[in-house]
Length: 205
Ligand SMILES: [Zn+2]
Image (cartoon, rainbow, N blue to C red; front, side, top):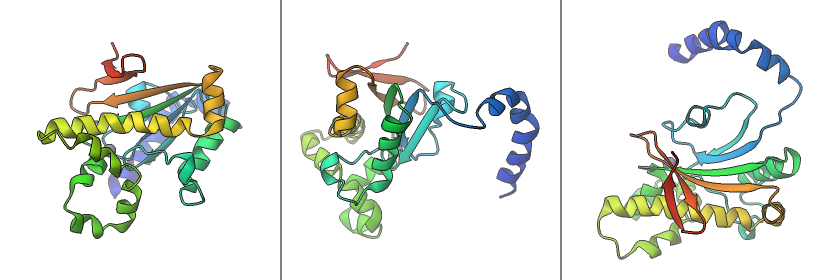
């Protein structure tokens, strides 16, 4: 535990000091340009991989970077939906990034034996939102390839889910809002961006 307490002191003495002016500017309000939806996985740090500073990116992280579709938001998934609503309606972000990643433990859990998932009923219920993606991958026997495809399919699914909200779709169609699907590779630091026309992920260079 000491490590994070020591970190707080170091942050205040070093990082905060070197960005003092920025924090002073941010004290009243935020005006982020981007809403980032990512996995809770500790290995992906949104500000680090986008080289952004405090105040630039509004963030939602959960297991497997999921946005429940508007059709299931009957009060069950208020957390994710309310953050989306705030980002688009109140903060008026210009961009939404859905960022999935390699070796995602959440998505891998879809393939755990059912009895293991039953010990984690909350995760089990959450992952129900994407469980049907497995149907599209049933012909792939290579588990590594299957995982990679599932992670990418999931990103595309979440973009579709975003567009199921009328307040997102309207701004997207009038080009007030851009939506990106990213796939981050942990061991290389590379990010692939989804090409909507060619329906494939292309490395950002
Ligand atoms: Zn993950």
